[in-house]
Image (cartoon, rainbow, N blue to C red; front, top):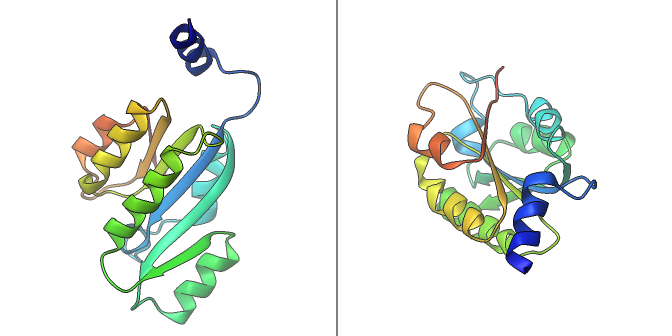
Length: 152
């Protein structure tokens, strides 16, 4: 019976907004040539629920100007000395097991995050991928419940 209730809740909701945890792959998405506006990303996500966690992951070479811009847009900043993808995946996976989070959103074009999306779905979480072309992974897009183009 609990399984039915879980499926019903997932399909029809409870009337309360879903809580979203959003993780941005900074080196992959915050590039001049892509022209991604993180504020617009937030607005797009808010159509699907309430953003409870919004983190941008950057490497140690991020400029002070970029760090300030990200912070000014209301994102928490995570600066890692090594592989951004690994740090983001580990952090996102922690939120998959948080009962207060309903939806995991990954902002990236990178197929490396497919295991995070798969684990989220396995745990009953809704998944959103936000990315854009060029090089928006088809495998990543096909793994998510909802796909959003960051530039549309």
